Amino acid sequence: MKICLDMDSVLADIAPVECQIIEEITGKRIGKIHIKDWDVLEYFGIDKKISYLKFWEEVWNRWTDIHPEEEYIGGKVGELMVLGQVDVVTASKGYTSEENRKKWLAKYHIPYSQFMATPYGEDKLSLDYNIWIDDSPHNAEAAIRANKSLLLYTQPWNVHVMEEGKVKRIFSLSDARRLLLENNK
Ligand SMILES: [Mg+2]
Image (tube, rainbow, N blue to C red; front, side, top):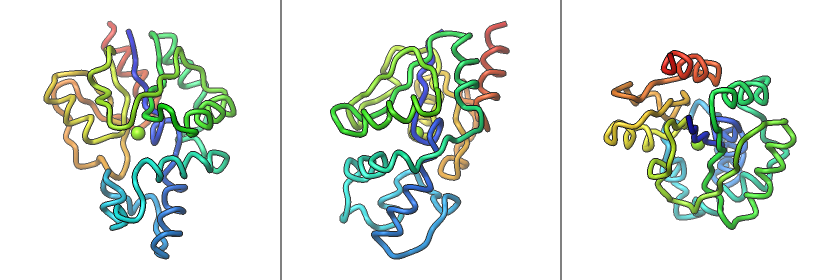
């Protein structure tokens, strides 16, 4: 089994840092729960002020402020690695954030088979994997259309996506492990 594990908002809880940056731009105080849309810059009306590239770069410049989504995250990813190859796949190719992401993974002792930095905007579902673990509603919808197996990591910006076909909702990486074990039987 080859697992494509997303990094932002699955391993790394970047939303509080996103909120901080949005607050600095807009002067409005917001929390993670207010991010109800994946297209966060449009949602807060700042897409003309900052590009996604700059935004993610700024988020990961502040990597020491980023906490894991879950406690014992390294152990939970380790348990997934017992089931197969686990690649951390993230759109950061060629940007300084790539190095900061690796430092962050090391800080929290998160194991992985390969770290894959893909170009921004690349379609993750076209990569050669059996299972995707991701929080993106766009990837979930694409997986439904392509009949691919995706475990949708629940976040405020994806609660509207309904489970369908091989797309299942999870609330933790332990959920992912349980579902993958059931599928393997
Ligand atoms: Mg993500």
